[in-house]
Image 1 (cartoon, rainbow, N blue to C red):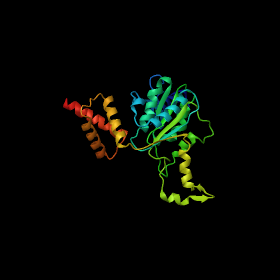
Image 2 (cartoon, one colour; image 1 turned 60 degrees about the vertical axis):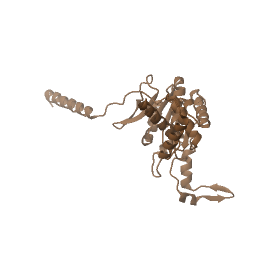
Image 3 (cartoon, one colour; image 1 turned 45 degrees about the horizontal axis):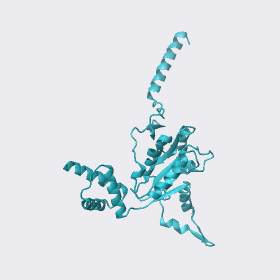
Image 4 (tube, rainbow, N blue to C red; image 1 turned 120 degrees about the vertical axis):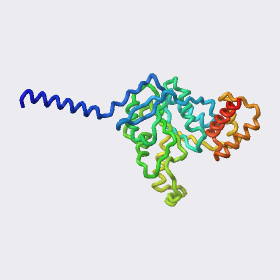
Length: 291
C-alpha cells in the first residue's frame, strides 16, 4: 500500500467512525447532586441515569392525618438512617389512598436539609438496582430508593433482583441506601386459594407450601412493615376539613361541606385520604368560581 492509499484509507476510516459515533446514544448526564433533592431513575439508549426532579411534591408530615402510628414508625426509622444509625428497609402496605406514598414524600421534606435524598425507581427498572446502587455507593448523602405501588405477577422475574438488593447478595448493602416500597399487597405477589392446600400442620406448627414460602420470603426481607387501613367516616371528614384549611378555603357551612364530601366519597366508592384531597380541591375550585 502506497502512502497516498494509506492516507486515503485512514480518511475513510475516520469518516466511518464519525458516522458510527453519531448513531450511538449520548452519554447519560452526570447528576448534579447540589441542585436537586429528588431524582428519578430513567433509561436512555440502553443506559440508566438519574434525572433530577426540579419540583418534588412537598408534603409536610403534620398534614398527614389519622395515620399517627404509621408516621411514628416511618419517621423514627428515617431519623435513624439520616443520623447514620442502623435502620431497616420499609414496606408500607395496605388500603389504597391512605397515605403510603405521601408519607415517604414527607420524609424528604422533613430531612432533606440533613442530607436525605429520594430516588424514585419504577418496578420495570428494578433489574437496574445493582447499577443504581453502585452509582450511589460512597456518596455522603443518604438515599431512599422509592418503589411506589409495587407488586409483581406470579411469573415476573424482576422481584428476584429486589430480593438480592434487600438481603441475599454476597455484597454488603451500602449504609447510605435504604429501600422504601409501597404496595396494596402485603406479600407483593398475588396469592391464590389453591396455594393454601399445600400447607401442612406438623406437631402443631404451620408449614407453608413452597409457593407461599417464596412469596413470604420477599416481603419479609423488609425489616419494617407498616400497615395502612381504610378510613372510617369521621376520619375521612377530618382529613377533608384539614385539606380545606391548608388550601385556605373558609368553611362557613360545615354541614353542607360534610354532606358534599360524603356524597363525593360515595360516588368514588371509597373514603380515603386521596379522595379527601380530591374533594378538597374540587370544593376549593367551586368556591373560587362562585366568588
